[in-house]
Each structure stands twice: as structure tokens, then as C-alpha cells.
Image 1: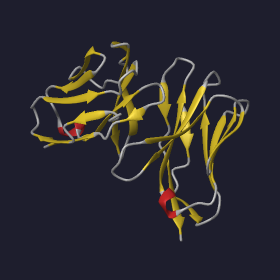
Image 2: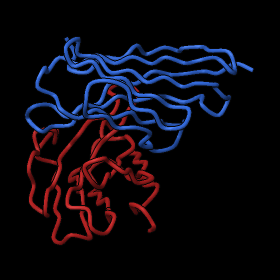
Image 3: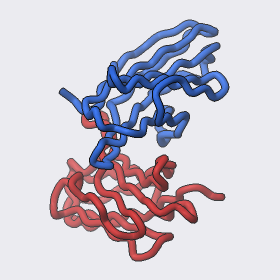
Image 4: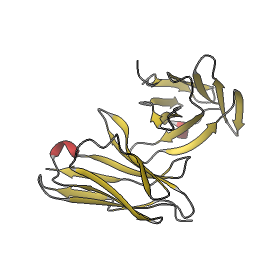
Length: 110
Length: 109
């Protein structure tokens, strides 16, 4: 089992709909969780971080964390073509080591 | 703030040559991370520093790779000798929330 798992996609979502990206992790002691967006040929860009169970909202983005089930998700409301990118989930493990998932490719179709 | 600065942005070299990648982190950040990204292996953490001290270098693939952080504003990643399988994009990231630099695209022929 990979330490941080994401569906590689591509995930295709119509413009204006909600895109839901999921990530599971194996280390139950993990404390910090991050979502990055990476456009093709560019570097990863931090979108959201979340430390506590529940939801955290920032504009069109909502991160959801459920430590009991060991998953973290990212919701993108009112999806735009400019949201088309690869989304990387990252987790700080209990050993204070950051581990990235392999990323989910998201495609927003007009 | 200029963000994380990396140089060079592109490097093409021949197998066996020494390669040095450079990074200037964001001022005030205490941690610095070096990553390698390839299509096959995704984003891999190579090494990270905290307060200029290497904390975890377990991701460094071989002895051919070495990294230094002589002061809070500069770090290098060196590959000697380079091999074609080292071809990748190398990122430097600054701070616990990982603000990434633009990366160095390394091609070893």
C-alpha cells in the first residue's frame, strides 16, 4: 500500500460543476495535509492546507479532512477551464516527513 | 518577495559531468527541501534542511548526489558523476508549507 494514494485520473468535470478530488493516507499519526496544483511544465503551487478534522473553505476551494477514515479531499466549486491541472495531495507523516501522492489529473470541459 | 529562486532553469550535460543546481529560499523560512520529479516516479523528496542542517537525506538516491546549505539563503544540489537516468526536473521548496521554486530541468545525454 502506498503511503499517500490518489486516483491518477484523468477526472473530467463539466464547467460550472463541482470537482471532487480524494486522497487517502496510511499513517494514522499524520498531522498536516496539503493540496497543490501543478500546471503542465510548471512547479507545484500550494492551494490549501488543513490540520483539523472537518472542512476548511477558501474561495471556491474546500478541503475536507477525516482522520478516522484517513482521507482528505479537495472540492472545487464552479469549476473553470483554468482549474484543469494535476492536483497533488501531500501529508506530513508522524515521522515529520512530507510525502506526496502521485497526483490526479483534472480536466474541466467547457 | 521574489519567491524561491533556482538556477539554472535548464541544464543539458553529458554523462559523467558534474552538475550543480542552486536554490535561494524565501527569506525567513527555516526549512528547505529538494525534490526530483519524473513522469515515472512522480515527485520524490531527496533531502531537507532545517536551520541549514540536513535533517533527512534518506531520499538521496546514491552517493553521486550531495546537498549543502552553507547559510540560510543558499543551497546546492550536486550530482557527480551525472548519468542519463538523473534526467528530471529538480525543485527546491522553502518553508513548512512548501513554496516551490520554478525548477531546473536537467537532461543528461
